[in-house]
Each structure stands twice: as structure tokens, then as C-alpha cells.
Image (cartoon, rainbow, N blue to C red; front, side, top):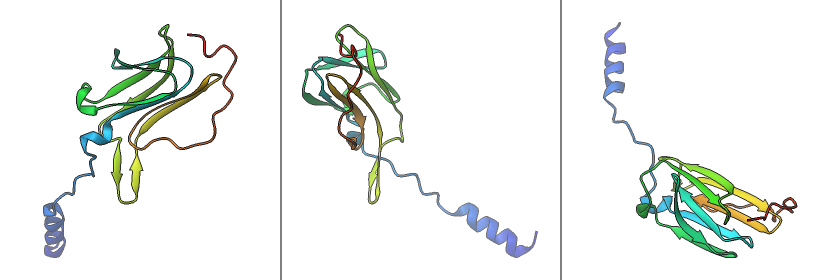
Length: 136
């Protein structure tokens, strides 16, 4: 290896590594918009943490939840899983020109249910759902 190539390799190896941008803990707050006629219970890593009444929106502070990663389920009153979403460290990012997170949505015949961490979901008007999908 030439001296120039060795010097270049050494210089590049000594350059500081810029860490990937991270989101503040509050950016990981978990949100639910329950625009259905059902009371929906959120479970994080298998443990029920909050029930959200019909036509309500609620948030759960990230610092009040177990450490990431989270497996989040939204359940009907009978315990039927309506939707699931996984939230892992590094999934949420907010900054100039960047907004991303984790989310899930389901359109039921009795309304729309959104669960997210990071920026809220945008999208089309709710779909029609399927007959019987709002049984508890």
C-alpha cells in the first residue's frame, strides 16, 4: 500500500461517526383514535394498559410504558384483536424533512380505528368495513 493510500485509510478510519438521528422519548408516545362504537382496549406486550371509549382519542406516555420494543394490540370488549402494530427503537424520527413512525389502521363497519407512535396517520376517508366486524 502506498503512503498516500495508507494515510487516507487512516484518516477515514479516524473520522468521527455521526450517530443516526434519534427521537426524544416523547416522540414515541402511543396514540389511539377510536372512531368506532366499541370500547377498545390497548395492550402493550400482552398487558392491557388502557381502554379508550367510543369516539375518543387518547395518548399513553412512552415513559409510562415498558421499554421498547412494543407489540401493541387493540382489542374489542370480548378480547378479539382488531389491529396490531410493532414499535421498535429507531422507528420514530422527527426532524427537518423527516417524519416517520409506526402505525396501524382498520376500517370497521362501525368506524375507523388508528393506533400510532410518531406522526399521525393521514389517508382516505374511512372504508365500509365488513358485516359483523363490529361484534364485541
